[in-house]
Every structure is written in structure tokens, then in C-alpha cells.
Image (cartoon, rainbow over all chains, first blue to last red; front, side):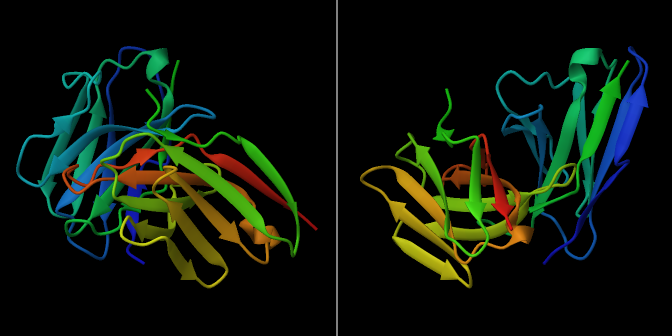
Length: 115
Length: 113
């Protein structure tokens, strides 16, 4: 199957700092990438949908100024958590898809801990 | 508002037996359903999917059944193997939904030797 990578796999940061997470599709061009967040023992919640070259579409309740998404190329999307706070600590997962209705391939996730 | 629900947070099954994971949904617009398997600290891995025009899809040991009238789907794994122990998520999407996936809460499956 298609491979999606995320970097870093885990990060610990101080409150108030910004953290950037990268999501790459390694062997296919991703027309659409998705960012999810998962709190412990809860479902994956979609945060935003990003299409290459256009602004991301955020889900209701997700602050676009706090979670900056850039999809600069067909193989790379980044999520920047700005001015991170302890409540932002979570498991962030990206997924990528090549064509409409194609299966989403998920990255391994990034665990963020904000102290 | 939880549109996709997995009401069993955990399930324990003997190796070799059948595992049945259930999922209910409320949104009638959903027309495509998927099952993902997830290990701790990893991203979900696609297992099997089903379109709303079908009521069954089979792939090796995995079979997904869809009952549209009941808004219910289930994943059958037979025979269950120790490597199947993981968290299983069902997800739903719809043709107008821009590929968005709505996930259930997940069911932790444990296969006992």
C-alpha cells in the first residue's frame, strides 16, 4: 500500500512555543491531505482538509489561526500548532489520498506533549 | 453528536474463533464505510470497505456486512489470530463529503491464545 510518513514521531515542548509537524506521501502524489487529532481512548477527530495549493478547510470548532496548515506540494503538508498549550497535547495523525474516493493512507502519527 | 458509534469499547475472543465487531451510524447520507486497524502510537491501517450498494464484502479472513435499514455494519474476522489484537475503527463517508471520514470510537480487540 501507499506510504505516508510523519515527522517528528513525538515532540515535547514548553507552553507558548510553536510546533511544526510534517506529513509526506512517499510514493504517490497526494491531492488531498487530512489532519486528525486523537485524545486518549477517543475517536480520531478530523481537524482540517488540505488541498495542494489552496487554503485548508477547517472543521467546526478548530481554530485556523492556532493550527496552521500548509500544503505546498503534492507530497508535503505541514501542521503548525502555534502558541501551544497543555490542552493541545494529543496524538496528531495525517492521511493522504490520491484521487476522489480513494482509500486514505494514514501516517504513523505524532505525539505532542506540551508542558 | 456521534454520527458513527462503536458501542463496545473492548472485545475478547479465543484464538481460532470468530470476532465480530459492530458499528452503528445515524447519518443517512453515508454511502461508503471502512474499517481500520490501529496499533498503539501508529496510524490506522485500512482493512476493508463496503459501498452502500452492497451488503457484503469479503477479503480473506475479513468480511464486512452492511444493513442499511438498520444503519448497522459489522466486521467479521475468522479465524481470529493473535496478530489481530488491536483497536478497530469503523469510519463512514459520503459522496458529497469531500472524502471526509467520520470515525467511531474504536473497539479494542484482544485475541487470547
